[in-house]
Amino acid sequence: AQSVAQPEDQVNVAEGNPLTVKCTYSVSGNPYLFWYVQYPNRGLQFLLKYITGDNLVKGSYGFEAEFNKSQTSFHLKKPSALVSDSALYFCAVRPPTSGTYKYIFGTGTRLKVLA
Amino acid sequence: DGGITQSPKYLFRKEGQNVTLSCEQNLNHDAMYWYRQDPGQGLRLIYYSQIVNDFQKGDIAEGYSVSREKKESFPLTVTSAQKNPTAFYLCASTSSTEAFFGQGTRLTVV
Image 1 (cartoon, each protein chain N blue to C red):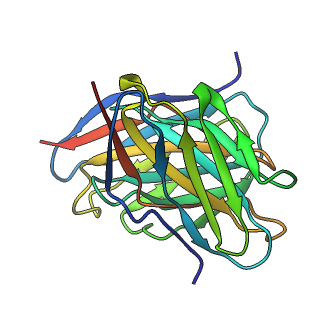
Image 2: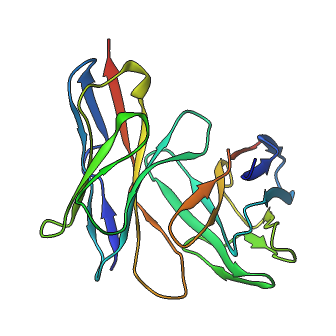
Image 3: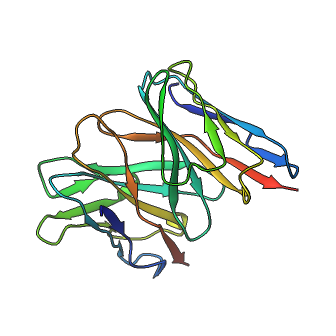
């Protein structure tokens, strides 16, 4: 079965330190990969995506993600965390199946940046 | 501005009532989706529609119904058959390369 795993329910990091939020997937073929962020009682906001090309993708608010095909991972990173980065982060995959745009979401990782 | 509008933001339902959540998009997207979000469970797909007048059940469709009479609109009805409807509901639409989300509706049974 196709799936997306975010192995950490919560990640704590001190302000100014680098952060990593992990994501691995189990999807055949070459899927599209996404990261979204959600603030309390709000919808999901797009951060970045990988479709093809350079394995390091840069997105909004200083975030970036590294695609690793051999490890089927797409970890979200930021060199220096801000308290305002505290939110719920979702990894998503769109399988490369023609005719459908169904997305598979991970269960989310809550990022807490400590001042 | 293009986007997805969900209304209302908060909705209260009495036991045995049907309620309808609105979702409108002006992005000219063919595909639209409804997700349910519960704490610690991520997003679960309720229904999706890839084209007007067609829709498919997702993973947790029981107790819900939808319609897609217009490209811009994809309302979700939570029926009395849904035994645990209290949740945060998210509507989305997709292009070929990205999903866009509304701001959500929080439904509470009172």
